[in-house]
Length: 294
Figure (cartoon, rainbow, N blue to C red):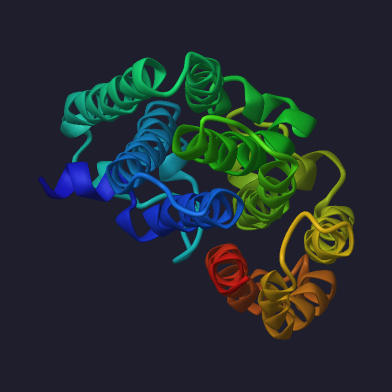
């Protein structure tokens, strides 16, 4: 059991909860109420999908030998669960199959109850899940954007759709908040892994253009997060209360400064990785609370 839980990286599953919470609260704001059973199923489906992503990454990183070369931190480099006993890889494959099946079954249920478009969103999500480690990691732009697309665009819009039966511009704009944040989450986590990743032919931006230039991308995406947040209120797609999420600027600004200053200095950069995780969790939740208050 510890291997199943370990490869799913339970501490990081909170990200799926935060993204689904944002979608649910946006749905409540635009439609007044949501079906509580559907909301619970949306959360379960999101958690299963995220667990599936993590398990696949753990499996592929051990099979490629990457996990044995990575400098592991509390926020990057995987869980290290499988390198303790590589004979458990078949158990991890079953974890992938079961979590993918749970997501698929929930998706089929929603297709029957709400509408077939969720199957398109779900299929794109499964494609991102299975393509990320073997293919997208070798294409810098896809490696940068696909995590945000999966958690922001697909998870938020998919959850919103199953709760409302439609997709609105409010949902689209809201999805850009986790889109930018999750792109940044994976981007910054690649800084400590860059040297090891080179050995297995990965090609993300910290490898392609260097960490200092990648730090500029990080800050740009962070700025885009807050610009999008303010823009939503200005054009009346989101309530003014969603500006509560601007409180995370107290974390974002020092984090951005640290990333620019310490891009090449892993020990000094390490606290920024933790702060970046907090930004990914707290910002969507505060925006969601804003929807409930609005």
